[in-house]
Amino acid sequence: MSFVSGADSPDRPLLSANGLVCFTNCSLVQEDGSLVQEDLWIDERRGVVVDAQVRDLLCFASSYMLTDLVVFHRQRTPGFIDVQINGAYNFDFSVYDGDDDTYRAGLDMIARRIVETGVTALLPTIITQESSLYPHLLHLLRPRTPAPTPEYPHGGATLLGWHAEGPFLQAVKRGAHAQALLQPAPAGLPDVERVYGAHNLAVREDWDLANAADSATAAAA
Image (cartoon, rainbow, N blue to C red):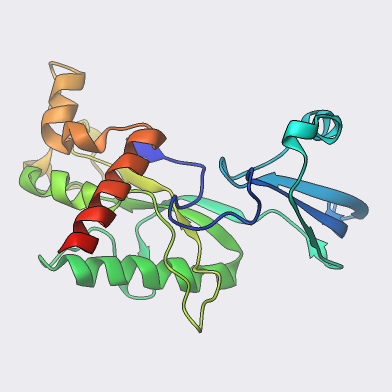
């Protein structure tokens, strides 16, 4: 089961007031490897490339006109999105030693370094865990982007949320998962909420509100 968010971190400032950015004078890489000279529009709020037809409509809608124009004379190509990654650089998403700061530091380290492989967003994946660990671990895996640093001024790849491979697996198809940790879900969604924590099954807006609340609490402490 996965929770995925396509948008960027809610605390990262947008390049434009309305979330729309145009990269112009670009060489866009096509599926066949060829290059096309064309502008590229992205929607920062949703983290997606704007459809060409929608883009043309936006050009004629003054209320949606671009407020900041970013010009690059470079080649543009989409980044990879890794939707199932259990860890990297000697850090395992499934290993939690009880220290939240250490775990978050491991997440940030991977998100920053993995961009060297062309990955710009990833979905941290955990294998079957002890039931008591899920609510807290999945909370730590909420969507976000690492804060910029002098070494990594762009922050890093976006952490899209979480991908839990268990514990709701058939025993005969468990693979490397510990059979003793597997669980049935006869009640359906209530069982999923009981194990994962209902607060971890949320839409993007709920995650944003939770992140804002946590930030406010940290600032007041």
